[in-house]
Amino acid sequence: MAENILIIGASSGIGAGLVQHYCQNGHQVQAISRQPRPGSMVSADVNWLSPESNQASDAGEQAVHKVVAEALKNEPTIIFICQGWLHDNQHGPEKTLRQLNAAQMHKSFEINVLQPALYLKALFSYLTRQTGVKVLVLSAKVGSISDNELGGWYSYRLSKAAVNMLVKTSSIEIGRYNKTASVVSLHPGTTDTALSAPFQANVPSGQLQSSAATAKRLAAVAGALTPQLSGKLLNWDGAVLPY
Ligand SMILES: NC(=O)c1ccc[n+]([C@@H]2O[C@H](COP(=O)([O-])OP(=O)(O)OC[C@H]3O[C@@H](n4cnc5c(N)ncnc54)[C@H](OP(=O)(O)O)[C@@H]3O)[C@@H](O)[C@H]2O)c1
Image (tube, rainbow, N blue to C red; front, side, top):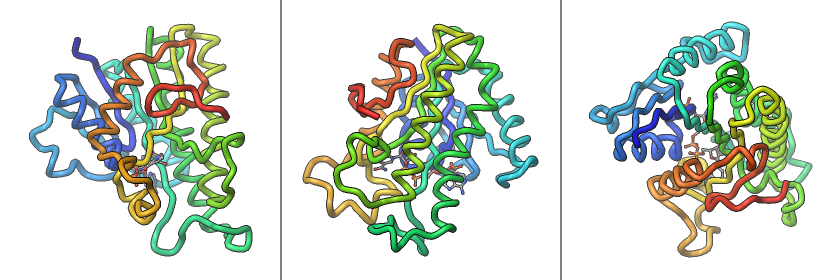
């Protein structure tokens, strides 16, 4: 059955894979991204929307509310939030506390936590009343505190642990109004995108997924998601991971 799908952060490697996956399988797709619609998606059946402002400000938040209101006209049943950041030309993941710096920590929390939080806020009223709605926020297993045996990657780990708490806390609040809603964090598995590119040499053979393969797996998790799992951190195969 064709469903209405909303992908937020749709220019990400994984987000774009999800857009393509759902379009190819006959679903109606709304995409939100700061980036213009890519040429590779010109023929795809997707409604591509961009916020008018990307500032971390009142204007930026109003722009998020406006673009979300437009996307919700199609009443999506599955919503993916895909924003995330690990490195840029100036910053790589910190191996030691000595490498911590404010600029990197701020940027990590801005993209990994604040962006998903602003979109959840804009979606809140819809999530409290839409029967069977499912929200999957892309996180990372490195944000699991109990799974952390290697250390390092301070800003990314901290921000992903925080986004897991954002999901857990908002799932409780949304669940008070809507017992049929599901809000989860989701570890997509290591996927061949710009985010993972510098670290792919360390990935054991056969474990690096294409964005198309990851999209297929994550869509299967979304399809099987139930409100009983709301608030959990899920792996790409649907297994519950420890916080
Ligand atoms: N790739 C992996 O192996 C892997 C592993 C574990 C977890 N993850 C997680 O999966 C998600 C998607 O990862 P990816 O590899 O597909 O990432 P990616 O290709 O690097 O895409 C980056 C994403 O972050 C958003 N973004 C970047 N800078 C931003 C800014 N300044 N303000 C607001 N948004 C910004 C982009 O949104 P726009 O569309 O608006 O540009 C885009 O959605 C992330 O949460 C990541 O942490 C990925």
